[in-house]
View 1 (spheres, each protein chain N blue to C red):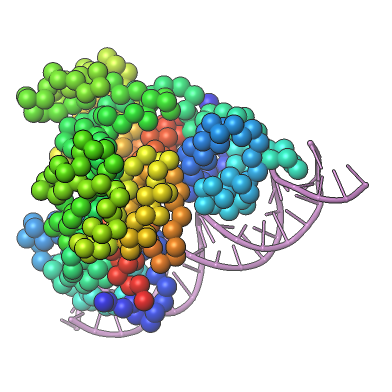
View 2: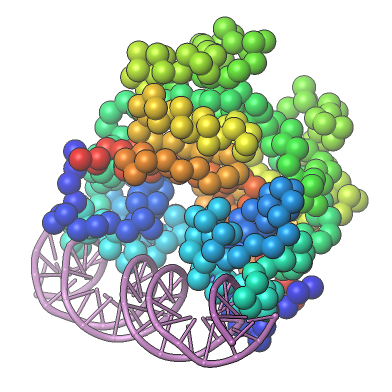
Length: 213
Length: 213
DNA sequence: TAGATTGTTAATCGATTAACAATC
DNA sequence: TAGATTGTTAATCGATTAACAATC
């Protein structure tokens, strides 16, 4: 596991940008670019070059002065920082429209995220498969999650069930939750939650375009 | 249109919290709660009471000292600030899994967002309906968007087509874009873009659970 | 009136930007 | 060597938190 330089606390803002760097480096690499400057990388992402250099400097010295960054090497380093140099097993809870869409989302596995189980309560859905992954009854969560060594749970159930599902996931030993339910969920401090709140995006756009002069 | 107090610039962080306040007030209202303190509202959202009072104070005085906030009244005020006191017509471009899921997402209309058109290039899909909304060919975007007075576009096409679609949406007169493609898109300054980048969530979780000691 | 809670100013904290020495 | 670009320190900017007077 890659440690940061002197155990300094890394800002959340920095962490949120690392996946953007990683993704953009990957695109550049696929285009055959071998070396990239913070200037060019920043231009592609929409971030200042200083920001990038500052962010990276929290973890080490990955560039070559006067030259730039070797794309492949920087990718490997950021991948290591993000913990992408391994496989994470994930489960989706709730096969509504969104859960179904995410279960079909193909871009997870190249980054090391493997969908290993899907859960629902609808008897109609249980036993079926999405993309070769079986849908199980929610009551079997404990067994399935430990048997399949699942570390991350994705919650796509309605808001009024989200906390209960989160509790069950935690109980089953999950370490991280990606929550799509539009509600705050409480978990113990050793479990990490990222909330993807799709109910705010349009409101925020509405605000800005309302006050266009 | 609700003006802020003395034309001060409102921080982006404040704007991003307003929809959370709105949503939580709505839930409270549905539970029959008529008055709420910043303390209680903050507890439900996971934000400090000071933060809420500070955010709101940028727009006016909505509370009653020693009492709290009238839920219904505060909701109306925040709704006005966000521009939710009207209907916005929206279009989805790209009927992949995610576009399909969003087209079926029922929670938009209660907040005044009406899906008026869906676009794709697949001849198989064109002419079909999702939830009573027709799928049109992308080449008819200009006419349809102005005919149906659509102000907001949702991009759910692959990353390599996103910029082109954004250009077409802007050309058709759209004012705001909700972008789900994992790439930065450039638009003129009078168009507002919110990016919902689903490719970063899992990486960010991976980072945090990797370094759990 | 006493207790509660807002709205706002001041203090603190954190993140971004600017500047530049180091060096490839 | 000269030019380019990193890594890092210092300066600035912005956002959050603390404190408290105002007042219901």
